[in-house]
Length: 393
Image (tube, rainbow, N blue to C red):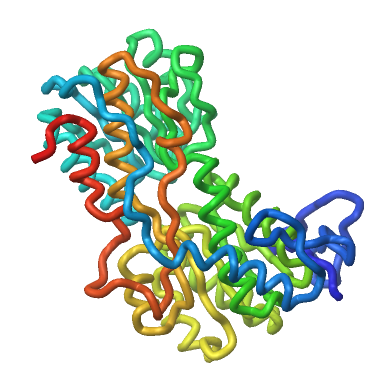
């Protein structure tokens, strides 16, 4: 049995702990597994140690995720109908993948008679998010929702929000929810959800490969939530598939916006002929990748998986050129963020578990719904929220 290894594929030498072994290509491999490791089974207990057992355990964990849930995660009705007129500002990266969140926030605030103002930020500018928060405060925000940020990047804007009494709602952040102590009052799709979504994506690869995958993980580590996702992915492969090999290719926001990611992936695959799966940390990183693999003659060797797909990846799954996606229920997540605000408006405590861990579903060619569309969330999620808010028909 070969050990699980975590390799960083990059143009510079990446240093790891003394257990690492440098190869002649400048890539360092760290032994993270071994014969004594055992995979988590579907009930959380350890399984046996062959590759087929790793694959079977992963398949058992995947089975419940092949169908979307029927109910939303929030359960308690509000004691009163929310008052209209609340001003919500949405600070979001200028990425294609964020548009479904924006659309859903518009629908949810409209349902409550609230006003939504969207501020798009430059993902490559570290000062853009704090500037967006400050603009929201200047504009008279009652609440601010921020996507993909963290207290580490908010700078002085967060103390300013605390001073002004304006709660910040995180989406897809690593922040702890501290309320008055740190200004963060909810974190929808935070690390609790990441710890489900990314292992589920890894499990599909483990099951599909028969417990012996050689994976290139492509990531933008500058986003804190993606750093947490990489950790979750690394940990899960190490624990659940010691016969698997995992490499990383770190790219930048500039690489993404400049259309340079696919060429870097193809170059990495051409250098290492053993890699048979590409796992991108979110869908935009895989845009155009099936076509690039086909052009390079790699499509028969390499399979692609990704969480949080965009429309391109959904079509690729339907066409059979992308193996599997684990979509982000952005619409339900956005309504969940508005639900958190509605509860804060009425002096209620926001249930952290119900507002953080949003649904996870795995889509493949066999079960992806048609006509194609984003995974919105649980069936009739809008009506379910409206019932909780006392505005249902």
